[in-house]
Structures are given as structure tokens and as C-alpha cells.
Image 1: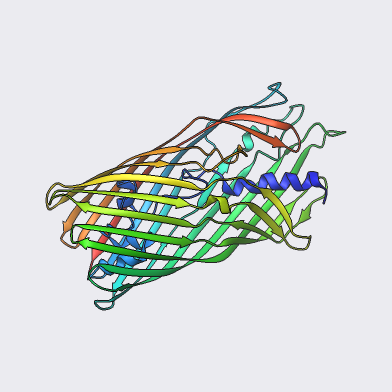
Image 2: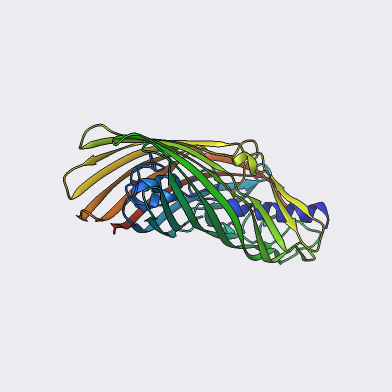
Length: 416
């Protein structure tokens, strides 16, 4: 395969990592309570079973079986506008609705075995995306960067099993294994002009692939007293392998069997402090090793190839929040998060990444002392970004992107 064909699939496969309204293609949607407080303190608050998605050691704080069932709806608004090439002489227009809205479920269960051990299982998602910018493939242009415009969908599900151990009254540790399933679809097709002859409708990429990967998480908590505690965790993410139909190339289609996508590791520290019976404050600092996301590798019947290289940078997010107990029936919470973007020197229309600010609020209605219905609402606001990306067909393509979202979340939590 020549370098030109390889560059076409490289840019197209990179869309696997398109917009999900967190740094890179990371999701923040694991619980309604977490969304309501901008996930501040979520690795140590342990007010419901969803804490095991952030820190398995916190399961040691439960002396009753706990269940949480949740659903998040992400209303995603990604705008790509004023896309042009050849110094602005060719205009491809704008796409005001480039990302798909998403429904993201989760479920968690914690089972204390005795005063020392607890086990738990959960199903949730840490990574995912969906975009469609194929409308920019307007026919009749002198040259069209079909390699940059198309449809992408990837869905990941994390199935976690964890155990915690209480060392003493203050210290607890925990560990878990993540079984990650992912499936994705890529389509890059359109009319390519600028060849010696008009090529007409061409398919450069047609991918339907899925696969499994295994990762893990370790964590610890330190309970200073019953009103103050600290937690930390480190999640090890695998290189995800997706296999299936991977057809691409122009004018002759070629095939690979697998796409290898390295996922980043996640480290976080969190704190919770009860100021009085009504008020508590909490915070989180999280580091994600997006610098590990260097290359996408294709393997199969052809020789292994580096199909896309990145120069991403590691990213931090910081969040702070407060919880107010109104009465025995209602609890209110709010939070703020600043989420740093990961794109460094290499930018892409397919990854309209930027720094983002989260403004969140939530509440819990306590049906009784053991059951509650929890609500979360988050407004995510990104920055306007100018993107310059090189197409193998049209040269440098320039566009302007913005990524916003509103998260609506609800869950039911119960102690047995």
C-alpha cells in the first residue's frame, strides 16, 4: 500500500477518538450523584454504590449491601463551521449538529462479607463517542477531502469486579479488574475530484469491528475521622483491539484485521469534609495519561502499520463541590469542574478538543432511610477552536469547532 492510501485510512481511523465532551474521548457520566457535584470527592464520598467506579477501596465503608441503578442522557452540541481549503478558496460549509446524543446506563452492587472484606460489581463506561460530518462532502467542489469527513460510532462498556479490605479503622485498600467491550463503525465515502478524471462516488473506509480488553484499578482510603476522609485510585487501561471488517483504500480496497488503540491510565485523589450536620465540601484532582495515546496500529494480512500518530499531552481535571442536607427528605449538591484539553501541536476536525468548564447541580430525594432517587444536571461549555488539518486529497483544511453539552441523569440507590 502506498503512503497516500495509508494516510487516508490514518486520518479516518483517528475519528474513533472524536468528541465525547471530556478530555480526549473520555466520558464523565458514571452516576447522577457524581454529575450533580461535578464528580468532586467521588472517589471517597461513598454515599451510594457507584463509588466503586472510582475507587474500590471505598467499598470498605459500607456495612450494608448497596445497589445503584442509573441512566444518563447526554445532549451533545458539537459545531464545525466555516470549513475551507486552498487558502479559503474552497468552502465546504458548516455542520451544526456533528455529534450524536447518547443514553448511558450504569449499575453497581456492593456486598460486605464481614468487617474486613467487601466485594462489588459494576457496569459503566469510561470511553465513547459518535460523530457524523459526512454532510460536508458536498458534491461539485473542485476537490473534496473525503478522508476527513464521514460517520463514526464507537461504544465501550466496562464490566468491573472489585474487592476491598479494611486494614484498620483508618486505612482501607481495594483492587478490581475491568473487562472492556467495544464496538465501532467507520464510513468514509463521497465524490473525490481533482484526480486525472472524476472518480465519482468512492468508499475509502468501511469498518465494523468489535473486541474485548482487560484493565484494572487499585485504590486506597484514609478516614481521618467520621467527618473527614481522603481517597485515591489508579486505573490501568489496556491497548484496545477491535477486529472484524476493516476495508479501505483508493482506488483498490485493501484490508487489515485489527485496529489497536491505546487507552490512557487514570490517577485521582479526592477529599470529603463535613463542616457541620448540614454542610460538606469535597474535591478531586485527576490526571489522565493521554501522552500514552501515541499511535494507532493496524495489523492483519498486510504488514503492521502505524496508521496515525498523535502528539497529545497528559491532562488534568480539577473539581470542587458542596453538599447541603436540607432536611431528612432532601439533599442538594452542586459543583464546578475545569477539564483541560489534550490536543497539543496536532489538531483535527475529528477531535474538536478544548478546555471545558462544567457547571453542575443535583439533588436526592430520600424515600426512606435506605432508598433515594438521585438527580444530576451538568452544563458543559467548551472553547471556540480554530483547527488546521492536512488532507491527503485537499491539502490543508481549516475549520472552527465548538463542543458543548447538557447532561441529564437519574439513579435509584438502595441499602439492603
